[in-house]
Image (cartoon, rainbow, N blue to C red):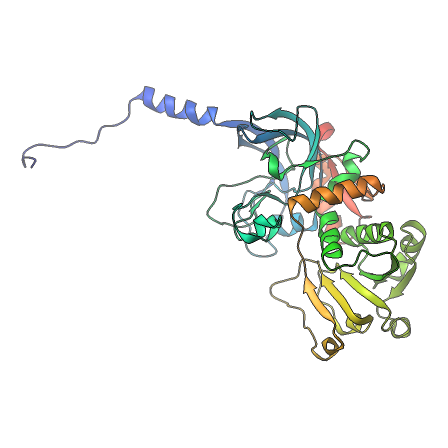
Length: 377
């Protein structure tokens, strides 16, 4: 028992204790620089921050290029109402390895490497054990999208990235870094459902709805699989580029009822990349028996799509799909390198990023912006 007349005072840390604490914190982080959005205006500007130092299982990547995904625009402008600022976007990261941890065995200094949509998962659940980390309930995204109670992550609109080697992708020498960067999100987002749902067989007929960042890569992968490809779009002006440039076999204007009726019951599957609300029944009518309509566009939470029941009785399936896991992403990159598949990109300097975001919001890009980080940051 302590006597009542004894005063107990809180001992304040002396200056040397404070300095040691700050020094320890500095030793556990490294300085980084990028561009960040501070509020829902989405306007990005220079931003200094820190990343963790390279751990035993980590690699450090000097970022050379980073693609701009449509989700970067959504998160920067808080379109989903979940953004936590400041936001440094970017999950289509490619560069060169500058440091490896002592337990790293898949990379060495000087290797080309990429980072896609995720950088962590629990590693123990059924999805993780099946190499589907993107479906893990504890997925850690490359940059923080919403407040999940974890550490704040900053994305690839920056000079350097530190990542566990398991979540890094090896980049083949014959795949250009600028053209290959969008494959780490857009590419795997269309490749994964095509493989899973069996829409990768030569001679099959695949419809691709929307000819943008996702859609143009779906066409390229489908043609590499040996499939017949029909692009379905609201824009007649895209017919030339779909057929002449991307080598699609046919083109349908979705609001032309005669064209849609002529294609009824002809497709084994459809990859629907459109994020805006649109009717699904006309698309389901294009499917053969046992056909599959796969949604990969980021849909609004406030305006859900309506799925009509009657067309489904033709043994037709409507499903959704996210980006694949790390193993499948590596398979996709290797397949792309083997078949010379790259995104059609417009490479931009860092200080053009806000204009690029405005153009992206208007759909005024063919088909993906990629930031030249190394030369312009």
